[in-house]
Image (cartoon, rainbow over all chains, first blue to last red; front, side, top):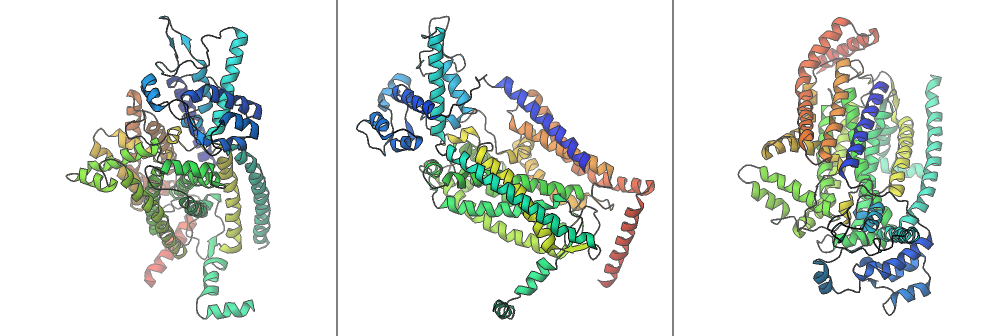
Amino acid sequence: MKQVILSLVIVVLGVFGAAGSQAGTTEVALKPIKVDRSLDSLRRGAQVVFDTCMRCHSLRYITYRDLLDMGLSKEEVDTLRGDRGLGEYLQTTMPPSAAKFHFGMLPPDLSLMAKARKNGPSYIYTLLTSYEEMSNGKIDNPVFPGIRMPDILNVTVETAPEERAVVEQQARDVVAFLEWAADPRAQERRELGVYVIVYLVILTALLYWRKRKIWSRLDEH
Amino acid sequence: MAGRIIDWIDQRFPLTKFIKHELTEYPTPRNLSYWWNFGSLAGIVLVIQIVSGIFLAMHYKPDALMAFDSVEHIMRNVNYGWLIRYMHSTGASAFFIVIYIHMARTLFYGSYRAPRELMWWTGQVLLLMLMATAFMGYLLPWGQMSYWGAQVITSLFGATPFIGDDVVRWLRGDFVVGDATLTRFFALHYLFPFLIVGMVVIHLVALHMVKSSNPSGINLADKDNIPFHPYYTIKDLFGFGVFFIVFAYFVFYSPNTFIEADNYEPANPLKTPPHIVPEWYFLPFYAILRAIPDLLGGVVAMGVSVVIFALMPFLDRSRIPGGAKYRPIYRVMFVLFVIDILVLSYVGLKPPSGSLVIVGQVATFVYFSLFTLLPFISRWEERWLRKKGLPPEVEELIRQEEEEAAKRGRRA
């Protein structure tokens, strides 16, 4: 049985190794990114999203009250919402007819974007930072050719190293905010998980000890 | 006082007798390995799914316009809704992992053989019910993959000769997957688990009739048994503990491992995703479907590939005990089968391209060959092993078995 298991493990690793290398060649190369989940990053990300993304995109599953749960102060939220109610969701200022006119489509909702794409955070970061000026003078995104979204963070304009660093930091902050928006309970989940798993490990250790104890009765016969 | 209450009940209901017969005196082989834990694990996963499912149903809206939003409402606004939902979505995958291991154990140790054919067949029915339940449940979040997965799978029934289109329309309740499909899938997804519970009871009644198989493959009844309680109650509880640690890791730290990214986009009947994949647990069968160029042929092959397991008691004609343990050739076939399943899963996952199509067809051929060759190989293997000579203890066990079988035959 042990040999069987061992050989199966080797095969499984082989199959998934092959799957991994295959995936790398067929899908677009995303820039890997580690999401900064600090409140500072979330706060800056929210600001960028409000100033730029939300000119066209909505976040229909996020209300202003959720931003309080995220950690923003009452004053900060009041500044962001203006005269909108706390229970209203984050709606774009662009009317749908204007969006249709400019882009030929409604820009997708951003609430779930970080989960609705494979490697969502890297996907968003790559998308935001990959704009380039093409040889014909037009601005396009070689990783997502023909994309209708403009170079919103001015990647193609701010090319000096220090300017570029600012833009990349903005992109990172947007990713942090959108990752939070896709799963606002994730922090709660990660915190609770530690307690659950520690509890289960202790319980299982005790059960194992009981099992050994009970089964040792059989040795007496 | 407690004693008097139990006496009162015992005069009206066989409570003490039941506990004695099914637990404290129920004989279980003492040599069961941890592979025998997966039956009780399947039971606990069924409980997780039913309990989490009932709580989800309290907040879910089976309506094409509200389903997706209501799942997000559960994830964001319901107290611990994210926990219930992630437990349910992770539980579906856990169910299949546990069941597949449970089946692999049965195949490896030959536990499907007489007198446990009915265990194996009720298990086979349970597998089909589980697959149907999982398939219908996957539609409910009403994401892109939910929608297009259901669209593809229901359209397969269009391969039915003569009445194909009618069958598809009857299943969907509409010309395409839509609100009518969602509501009926929800109703059935809520019903099926309780039918599964009923089938599990039958599975267990059969088990308590024939008793557990064991790694030696020999019927150990009255030979080397220990009572189920406390020995296996504590062993199963320990197994639950280990299972829950792994389960909790996925629920709390990697809950989206088993959820396709596309499914976080609401169903859109006008936008076909570039690559539609079924859930991972259907991948080998999906690969078999695609390996056959003809639709009807593919659907039949897929159906047969699932139910062919039921024939195992007839296909395996060897009388050597211990499943793969004392049978080197069967052991090779078992390993080959598992590798083949993994290859098929990989092929099912990827878009069909030149060389992968060939790989899928070869793997499909190997899949069915292993089953169809088994009657001949198992017979030949038995003759070869008998001639070569088995370990003396195995020969002794076979002799005892035959004696007992002869005795049973006389009584009957």
